[in-house]
Image 1 (cartoon, rainbow, N blue to C red):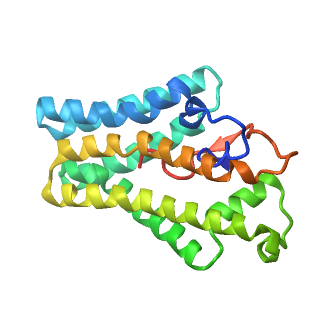
Image 2 (cartoon, rainbow, N blue to C red; image 1 turned 90 degrees about the vertical axis):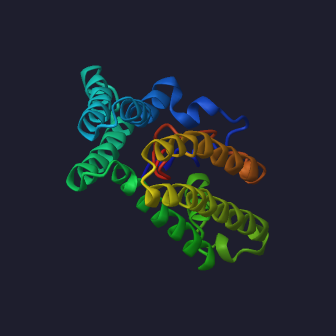
Length: 227
């Protein structure tokens, strides 16, 4: 399974903001549909052209990737999120429902990270152990006690990241504040994700074995960077 993008640099000596966000192209693909949604909705206050515009931008990103025969996973993931949002909004006739899927995803992610930390099987610990090749007995090894505590703290941090998105966006959704909701989604998307990835790298860089890989050749978008 590919390493999540927010974890992939945890064994690197230096942190790359560009790699974390997928480069300039990744930033554009992740942000453009939401930005277009806000701009078109503010300009027209009409749901149909807004949904069409956001869908077209997401679909264009996928098409370009496929035409150039490049990995389209990130673009496809973004398009899927946009498509679900469009379906929700179109079915209900409410623009704010475009953001429901992202809010629900963040609720699920926050609960999953918090539950794993409470169960002492933190998600960060599991991913890090796989990344550096720790033995299955490492969770019981006293020598790794500090690492387990650090992974637990970082898991709670990620639970807080997702919870913060929900805490900000849910009231805006309830109030039907579509434009404000779009701005909040953008502000709490990639910037907050990048800070979380940096904090993960900062927290774990001193624990990496000397022969661990410096980065991952392939990373996934687990963690919902822009949800």
